[in-house]
Image (cartoon, rainbow, N blue to C red; front, side, top):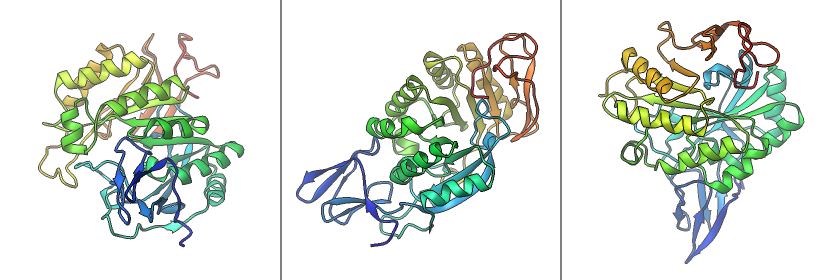
Length: 339
C-alpha cells in the first residue's frame, strides 16, 4: 500500500458494500471501488481510505496577509501546504488544476511527513502553518497530525477553508486550530448549489461554531458580477457576520474570469466599495477590499478614531501602530485580533 493511502476517519458502513463518509456536509455514500466527490477518499472493500495522507501537491512560504488574515500575526510568514482534492465544485475556482480531480485519476503530489512539514516551517522561520490552496477538510487526517506536532513546536495553525466540513470534523480540528479564514462564497442556496455544488447553511453553522470555540475567524467573499453581487445579498452576508461578531474582519475580493466562468466580468472597484459600505452599515468594524492592489481598502483603521493602524499595499505591511496590548496607538481603543 502506498504510504499516502491510510484508513480514513469519520465514516461508517452503509450496507451492501457502501460506506458513508462523515467528513464534510456532502455526506457521500460511496460504492466499493468508488470515491467521494472530493476525489481523494475511496471505498476499499468496505473500508474508507484517504489517498492523500502527506501527499503534498503545493507548498510555499507566504505572507500571512495572502490567506488573507489581517488581524492574525501581521507581517509574519506562514508555511503553506495542500494536497489535491476539494469537497466543492466551484465554477470560479482559482486553483482548479489541483483541487478538481477526475474520480479515477491517481492524486498527484510528493510525500511529506508531518515531522517534515513542521521542520520546514521552523526552517523558514514561519510563525504558522496554513492548510490552504485546496481544502484542508479533504486532507484532515494529515492536517490533524501536522497540527498536533506544530502546536508542540510553538507554531500556530491556520485553516483557509470553504467551511463545508462536518460538525465532527470541526470538533477534531478546533483544539489545535488558532485561526481560520472561511470563504463565504455567497449568501443564497441558489448560488451555492448552482455555482459551487454545496449548500449555504453548513458554512454559516461552522462560522458560528468556530467563533464560539475561540478560534480567530476572518471571512472572505469573492464578489462576482451577476452572480453574488446584489446589494441585498451582500447586506445579508454582512448582517450575518456581524450577528456572529462585529469584530470579524470581512475581506471582499475582486473576481477575474477563470476556469468555467470565463464569460463573467471582472469586479469593478466601485462594487467592492459598495460592499464595504454595506459591511459598515451592518455593524462590522473591519472591512477590506482585496485583489485590486493600488486602489486602497487594505489597511486596518481604528473603528473608534479612524487612525490608520496597519498600513498595507497588497500583501506588504509598511506600518504597524498597534500597541503591545492590541490597542490603538492614538486613542487606546481595543483592536480585535491576535497581534
